[in-house]
Image 1 (tube, rainbow, N blue to C red):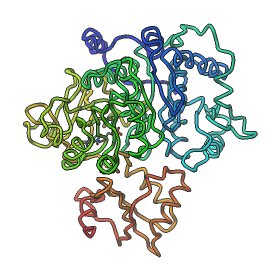
Image 2 (cartoon, rainbow, N blue to C red):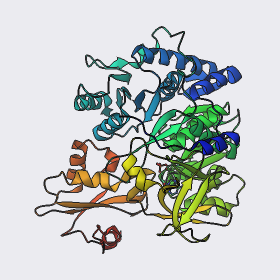
Image 3 (cartoon, rainbow, N blue to C red):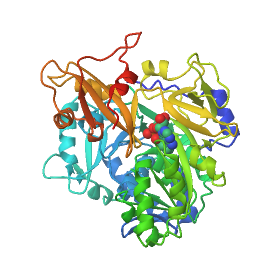
Length: 545
Ligand code: OOB
C-alpha cells in the first residue's frame, strides 16, 4: 500500500514555517538538544525510577539500538500498547531516534482494535506489557499474530516484563541492554524529516473501523508548544500524567511533550485515583495535571476529605468530554488551583481556557484555539457560517490539524470540505471572545466520559450475535459518565441481556469499554424520513432514569 496522504499545500507549509510554527526539528533531534541543554535535570519519574534528560537520551539510543537489531528503521510503524509506565516513553523516544513511527494504542484495546491498527498501519512490530489490569497481552498478541498470518507485516512482538516461554516474543529488557549502536544513520532521528509522519493517533471514530491520524514532527511539536505557551510552562513545570499516555491530551496538550520541550519533569501515575495522584503531587511537587470529567468529583471529594498538601499544584486541566459547570466551579477552590478546560481532538485543533480568563469563562466555556492561525468556522446544515452565539457544526483548519486520515481516501472525501476544513461533527456556539461552548454533536459517536465509542463499530458486532437482527447504539445522558451507551436490539426470539452481549463483544475482540451499559429489546427500529435509524426517537423512548 502506498501512502497517498493528503497534506498541507506548499504555500500553506511555507506560511506555517515563516510564522515560526513549524521549526523543522524532529522529535529525535529535540531529545538530543534537550539533553545538551538540560542534561542533569530530571526528565522522567516513575515510582522510584528517575531519568535525567541525559539519561533519557542515552536510553533512547539503547532502545533504538535494540529495535534496529530487529530490523526496525525509518518510516516503519510500530504499535505501542503500554500502560502508564516509563517504558512507554523509552519506547517512544527509541522509535523517534530511528525515524520510526509509533502507533498509539490504548491499554484497553483488544484483538479487533489491535489487529486493525496493525493491518492499516502495516506495523512491523507491537510493543505490549506482559500483563496489565488482569489481562495477558501476550495472549492477545498470539491471537493478533495468528490472524495476520505469514503474509502480514507484523514481524516482532516486544514484551515489557516477562515475554513468556516460547512464542518468539522479544524481551524489552534484553533489547535495551543489547550493546548500543554507535553509528545510526543521521544518528539523532534515523534521517527523518520534520515534515514526515512522526506518530499515528487513533481517531474516536464514527465508522465501523477506527481511522489513523498522521501527525508530523512539525505539526505535533507545534501542538505541544502552543499549549505549553498558553499554560506558561517552564523548566520548573512538573507534569503528572494521570490519563493514558497514548491519549493525545496527556501526551501533547501540553502534557508530556510540552513539558519536556520546556525542560520540565514528567511524573507518570500508575492509576488515576486521587489517592495515588495526591501522594505523587506531595512527593514530586507536581504543578500541572490533566483529567477527564468523570474523575473530577472524586478528586474534589478526596481533596476535601484527606489532609493532602497540594500546595505545588497550580493548574488542573479537564477535557475530553463536557465538564458540567458546577463540577468546574467546585474543583478550583477544593484543590486550590486554576482550572483549565480543554476541548481538543486527536485530529488537531486544541481549545483552552486561558489561565487569566474570568471564572465564568473558565467554568462555562471549553476555551478558544491555541494558535492565532487556527481557522474555526461554525456552520449550519448547508455549510453556511452562522453568527456568534448560534449553534452550528465546528469546522477547522490550521497548522496542526490533519488534512487527511492515514490511508483512508474514501473517508476523507466526506470528513473534509473541498478547501481542507476538517468536519469535527461537534456542535458549538462561539462567543464574541472566540471561546467555544460545546452544545452537542452530529457525529454518530458516544462520549463515555472521554472514551469515544463509534456507534457503527459496535452495531456491526452486535449483528454478529445470532439472536439479534437489528441494532442501534445510542448515547443517553448519565450522571457519572456524562453519557452512557444503550443498545436497542431487535430480536425475533429471546433477547440476550447486557452481560451476554458484553461477553459476545469480548469474543468479537472488542475493547471492554465499548460494551453497551444497557440493552433494550425493541420490536423494530424507528426510521427517519430518509430511512435512517432515528436515534433521537430511540433516546426519547427510553424511560427517564
Ligand atoms: C480528545 O480527543 P479525542 O480525539 O479522543 O476526541 C475528540 C472529541 C471532540 O471532537 C469532542 O467531540 C469531544 O471529543 N471533546 C469534548 C471536549 N474535549 C473533547 N467535548 C466536550 N467538551 C470537551 N472539553 O478528547 C482530546 C484531545 C486533546 C485534548 C483534550 C481532549
